[in-house]
Amino acid sequence: MKKYFFVILLFATIISAQKNDYIEFFSDKGRLTITDDQKAEFGRYDGFQLYLNNGENLYFMAYSEELPVIVAVADSTGKVIAEDFGNEDGLVSINTKIKKSGSYFLYVLNRTNSLGNYYFQYAIASNSMLKYTGKNELCGYIEFLLKHTNAYFVFLQNPKKQLGESNLILDSYLDEETVTVNLRLFETDNKNDAEKKKSEYLQLMKKCGLGDWKENKSKIIENSDYNELKTTLTENVKSAQRKVELTLFDYSKASDNTSKKYVIELSFSKTF
Image (tube, rainbow, N blue to C red; front, top):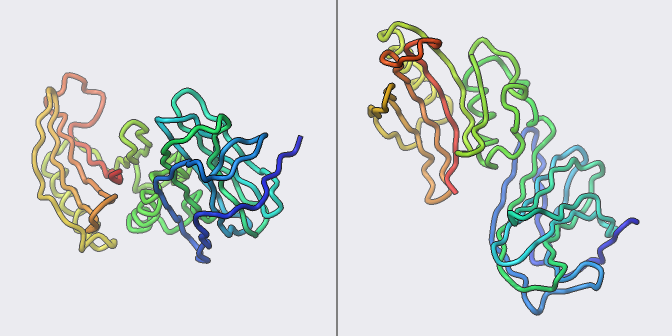
């Protein structure tokens, strides 16, 4: 049976920007209160309005430790086009493609009419951001990944496939535990070559839009069977900072000789 929401008084109205390659991201806290609207078939709900364009990709997530929440997206007529009832971990999310331009309503609901706080975030991506189609150059990949970093990679679940084949990237993967995307750029058995290459990468990164980011000088991190020489560039903002780390891994003392002795990786992350 089709479900519909009636238009309600919304706590925010946001219009999606019109650009070629973009990812927009927004997060905030909300609260279901006694004054929020409720319907018998849906329970208590809160929501806001977005104008979305045909072909855009929408991610919408909510989480609460105080009450079970549901997320839903409805079109301008009130028809629900996507919803998630969640699971025991309290997190619910929607990832859907918009098929028609217009106003859409994003809802956080609780069927038991409970009151409590919740956290939510949404992201909007142009269709061009789902796969890298730019030039085969490191600056292009960095720019592409920085946009995805801003939204915690919600649209980049398979970097190896979405970045495509490139002689500049030996391997790529998303670490879901740390929420980082990692690129393996270089590997060798020659220490001098590795150190020289790391320096070259760092200078190139600064020319790729990272020149005014705060640089933490390289430092050696010792582990049980390998060392890391890490340089971190951090965005100059007060909160939710994006970080790009260039790391030279030294496996010369490792008992496992299946990989090269020296490996350079580039990782992207954002603080919460």
